[in-house]
Length: 119
Image (tube, rainbow, N blue to C red; front, side, top):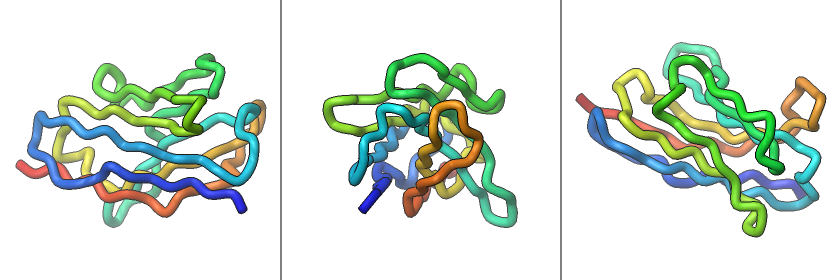
């Protein structure tokens, strides 16, 4: 059974930092791209960052470039999202997803973790 389990969300003040984790299990993900998305109340889910396990193909949304960093620990099958200089508009539920290399559709999703940035 494929599982993506996010953790690390919470409440943080503007300017603070959080690190989200996504533990992947149930299949081999070496040929997958791992992505982070977020959904704020009343808004559609939006792309945040993505990368392959090999370290190539790293992408960021313009709104988080220079503040967020996506990384992987291949030995732990875990992908991270380091979020620095957080803004109130970063408040959202953050989701981890996985799609095949070369594909466009994310096949697997986690349950999400809430990030709240307070002013």
